[in-house]
Image (cartoon, rainbow, N blue to C red; front, side, top):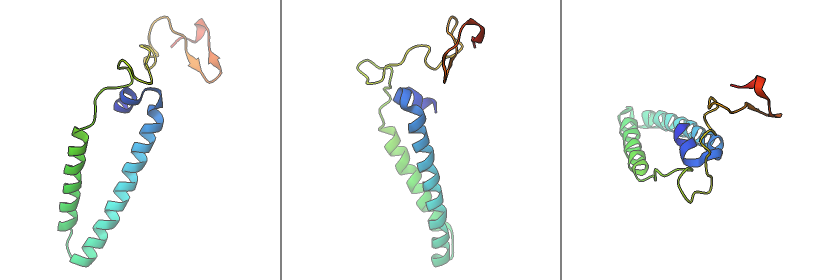
Amino acid sequence: MALCRRTFGTAAPVVFGWVYASHQVGAALMAFAAGLLRDHLGSYDSAWYLGGGLCLLAALLSSGARTGGADQPGSAAPRRRDQFCPMTPGRTRRTGFGVQGEAARW
């Protein structure tokens, strides 16, 4: 979540949801594929090798990802210092009904 927050700023919860959902779909597809491979080949060895190869591919693709972030100059989504730090002194709690007063400090 922190990586999504740093990279995508205020859109982080939506992006993290898509990352999580795609992870679950991939896990389900690989489990199904492993079962098919086991049925046809009689062993899980090929499924392990396929899974390991996919992990290596993902590692290579991840190493090329930019590490900038939403708080970098020129970014489309600038981030305030207190945006993800509700414990910052002098700030009031933000709720769905607006900003509450002094009694509702974090």
